[in-house]
Length: 286
Image (cartoon, rainbow, N blue to C red; front, side, top):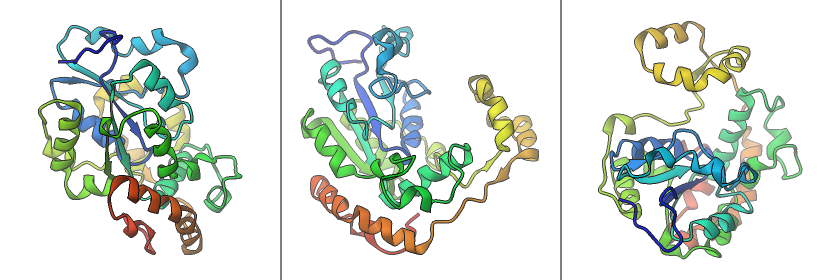
């Protein structure tokens, strides 16, 4: 299934979902995993970003068991888009890789990212402490949403035809067509799972176990994963899980974020040839 290029090893992935973080990349991963002609590991390798120093053997381990299976290999690491070195590193090893990138209203993305680290206990203060300026302990909240800035870096290393871009809004409005377009881009016949499409990946409004319990169970994540969805497991989890009360994003801070992203959104719209003005309107969009 994998198309070989000069210098391409048999274990090299042919396509990569590069982000953005909190833009439903998990939804795209799970939709593509339904396709029997593809193989994508569940965990994000982060090889071309935070794990690069671990070397190629670390990366190869994600794929080598599936070499010779006839399946096209791919991966998803949502932090690649904003990482300053990921594009150059991928271009050096995988110059022919087909790339998939998705974008979400950057204001909503920033707040969603904040909520993720809030429920993990990584951040403890309200969003004003992190979303007012880039000078804060978690600059990724704001920086990761500067999509046009990041895309220009990727376009310095890859031709535009190797990059397929779509929106979080597309996933909500046209999930089947979105999967079909991704599949055409990476070169496989599409397989669409309507039940999977109804799931909202990375839904921050889900009920979660208390933080101390999640920390205890964290080392068992891979062991517990196959039990998810089983009635007994879900009923037991439901006894303890609760919705998390997040510090709200105030209207004033939302307007400040809208202004912060306005120029970048305009530039991204030009790069994509799409009208993104709805992202700059007042109020939450999802």
